[in-house]
Image (cartoon, rainbow, N blue to C red; front, side, top):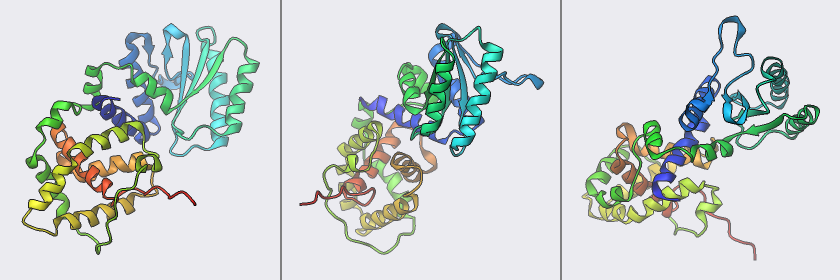
Amino acid sequence: MNLQDAYYEQKFEVEFLRAKGDAFQSFFERLMGLVYKADFMACRPWGNQGDRKNDGFLKSERRLFQVYAPNQMDAAKAKAKITEDFAGAREHWGKHFDAWTFVHNATDGLPPHVQEQLLDFEAANPGIQLQPWSLEELRLIFRKLTADDKASWFGLALTDATRIKLGFGDLKVVLERIAALPAPPMTEVKDVPTGKIEANALSEAVARLLKEGMIKSPLVAEFLAQWHDETLGERLAEAFKAEYRRLRGSDGPNWIFTALQSWVGGDHRGTPEHELAVLAIIAYYFERCDIFEEPRRAAR
């Protein structure tokens, strides 16, 4: 995966994780509209008729979509939602579709009895294919977007040229911001263990961004060594540890990485140079093991 693709895929995954309810439907419609253009027909509620159990239709595949993205997936509510929406879809749109797709936001998959329900409905309705879609299915569609479409959605991406242009000035702005944050007492800094990316279950996109940051992370060490305040590096390390501890146990390691990007980058994010500076600093403290978990040692 190249740097530009990794940058956009991470942005896409974060958008997926953040969107709930109506925001998730808008996210889905934007993706499908950008990829399929006029082939995808979004459907909005109309008066007391609602949307007649239609959250979008892909004409070329005769595929009808129903979108469901609660704050927390509940198996009983999901089953009731599928039962109601599929029945309504057959009633109002049955002659138009051959595939019915339940788009949801449960990244860890649907409960087994919900999957069983979909299979039972499919068996009872020959000629109609029922499928659940979530992050990975939508990610494959996202990969069909042109670079211009991705840029229109998420802004300009990091490039190899950005890496070449990065200098001390870009790092200084970010470092000084973090340096102003209060930090707890210092603790021991250990060597970087092997397999840390895998041990933290970081996505391919996040791993690619971290590795890109590692290329420039020596600039951070050099910057700190030359800075007039020799305690800056360790104070920053403690600030990183405190922020990581605060975020740990939230929505998973990839979300934590994104939250750290926002924390490091502050309110002035946007340019590729600044984004790469943020990655270089995160990678520096990642390599030092100030943030994220160390892999467990194999038992002898």
